Image (cartoon, rainbow, N blue to C red; front, top):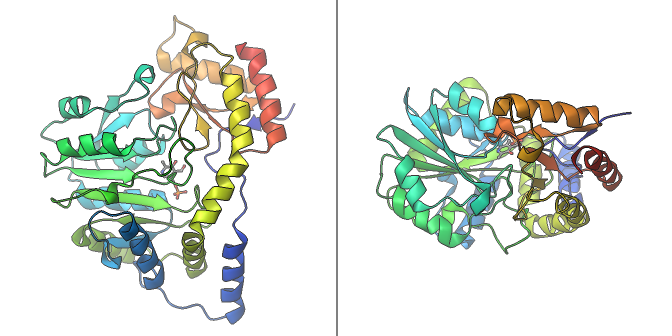
Length: 362
Ligand SMILES: Cc1ncc(COP(=O)(O)O)c(C=O)c1O
């Protein structure tokens, strides 16, 4: 039996035709333009104009650095703002990649566990109680990977009322899934809120909502001094993102409404298929994920009660793998006993994966 993987964070999407034709035209011309290290001005201007349309303080190209993927944008920002021993407050569950990024940037992780029982609400009270004098960054993902939870405008506003009282704090929002939302019109960008103290940092990319997997392009938005520090670091240690990838990112940004609409429509049948299955497991998924292409069911009812949570979680994942399905162990996201399942896979694979999972879990 060959394994089916629902573990990849990258979907099975093709780039939009607007993107491929633009890149092919560029390649036919032959000579590529030389990009400044912070990214092509046209791309940064287009990104800045898009944010401007959402309201909030003005964003200019000086706030933006194009990076080799979103991970690189996160790392650049963390390195720019953290001093050794500074704490990064990380609400959990959260994307497994953050742990190592924070450690390598010299930060100390402080987890802020949120509960599935109240749909992972992150309240101002919880946030205030978790802050210490060493907290330098609140790292926030909207929509959240792995839960798919979307934090709505009023919720973010309430959190920012707290963060504004701590001007030494940066709020870093990872918005890479912002085009994949099913239960609201838009995901509120952190950049659409007032930022009187210059605390707001945003990263985003093109490999999820804009289907450019493999093009390795992302960007960061920050106050000019922080953006400059990130660009200088990129210049000293690497270079500008490859121009074909930047042109692909530009074309995808311009075609964003149609790309994200098509993607959501493509994902809907699989989403329904997986949610219907998870509804058959009592209590596993009390709230449907509002965004992303993941579901993060609570499988704690299926783990060995006598083992340590991480060990019991790993044991369940091994059991699912033995049944033919690979998933992400929730323990790597700060939630042992949960599993992240991606439904951005071919429909036939998902159907077979569900059949196999049902054999273990039903
Ligand atoms: C929340 C989050 N941030 C960042 C990344 C990394 O994105 P990129 O491929 O653009 O480096 C991922 C990839 O899975 C992710 O889920």
